[in-house]
Length: 221
Length: 221
Image (cartoon, rainbow over all chains, first blue to last red):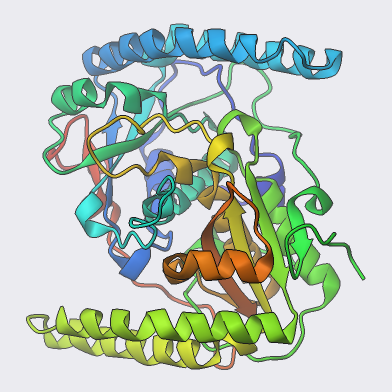
């Protein structure tokens, strides 16, 4: 079993988009899935399932669908960069190159983890609000984060993708996903082509936290 | 800094609902928040903020609101137990007792972490589907899971709650949360009254994973 300090795993968990097609040992894959099972969920109902796709034909089809939805998205992403700083643009261009690589090779990932969920098994406390509902995700994405962290521990590259939701009817047909289950993410995993996980670029606590009320700076006393 | 193995943290992260009012050292709280900042989000946009509520008056008001929304919820939870097995009912009753304790003492938690999000900063790829949207949560709850795991590492009890979304207009007014931001969770944290984190009860990989297509058992080869 891979051992890694919790904080070390978190602060070096990068989106790794260049994956080698080499197979993943069964016991490694099992530990990644088991990490997902440990996550909390509303009422401990665990209304999610993961389809572990290794079958080349199904992976190829998922790869075609992924490529199809990614290209327009990448374009709009590049358009938004028009008024970005040099540094931002340069970073974004690196991300785009990696995203394009992923789009070309998605179906060659050794494993695609398709995360499904049952809307009827979720307590959606924000369903009646006049805004986008997100709370259903509170019973799904903690499991996905566990899975990503486990990949980090095991030296597997991975990235959380949600673009295939735009082709959900096709994906459901391909994998036989029954009503009323939907798809929340597809995570390609595999050993990294390049250096894999490492330093990440994130905002600071001071930028993301407030003290007692919105807008009041949070800082260590 | 607290050190713990990643897998050990995950498999012992319980919902801890009985929290002592004792204060949390600033450096501990900072590490918990920093763990949240490390999480992935769509386009690395981190369209979430956390309000760290320690002010007694605001905590008390949040506690009143929490109690108000919890009681009917607990009742409906108990009604669903009518046809449960003896073992299930006994486990559920333990959870209900802990939930009632939390409802009575929510506002006495030393810190309430109110997780906010900006719907306009999320790429919601399932917005046009004819089902509940969850994908927005994919840019929020990985950060919440990191935060919970960090609490585990630091010996802090915690539990992911979403019931206060049902009183979101009140919560937004109380904390000055501006348009178009919403609330995704409130996590009370504090040192445990009882033994705190420990063994968890979850379904197995075999129950939650399929191989290649829905319904095909997944098992280690």
